[in-house]
Length: 268
Image 1: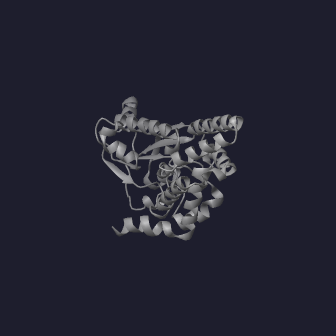
Image 2: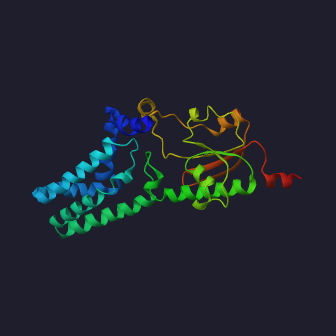
Image 3: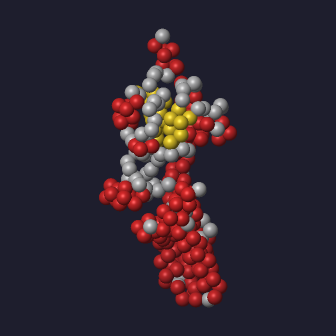
């Protein structure tokens, strides 16, 4: 479709978005999760990588990075998985050239950094799938799905993907039977503009750590706008907050027009 083509071929080619994508790729490969230790070792032992074999491997890795940068609007770190083994092999080869102590120290620091990265959330936006924040994301969604299944069994649910699919498809393990869902791509205000009535709305945190100083550029080049707030949804649709859960900096909130089935039973 024209929309798919525009997003995956034309959208990434804008100079600003292309520069941001290249910076993200470079940071993810050479700096993040203590990769900078391996990068420093590779630089120190750079004379080792002059052979034709290393040049060929380097060209293949570079070609892959350019391919996933130039093609595709999404900029997810998982697209770099084919290149990561090359980086780690080069780092290990470099450590071996620097002596036994630098090798042991560098290996320990990089391993520790990789393990710490599973639990430590950086102070800038990142996809939850990059570390164990994804398990928190899943558990919060499972809790919300169980709540609306139990307390609002027949209600129409409005929420954003991927929770919308989790509610719609029992095979995902969140619900015992599929629910009727109005799916939103995200919680930006314009996504809700065409919806006149909402019976039950589930809001949740989709991003980690906003960077206010960059928001003007993100608004201009990435069509970013802050997500709609709970108070705005309450005022617009006559909803009330009925449940909220928080864990490790993430949250899920359920808003509804009427009390839950169980709450009505308690009142009666």
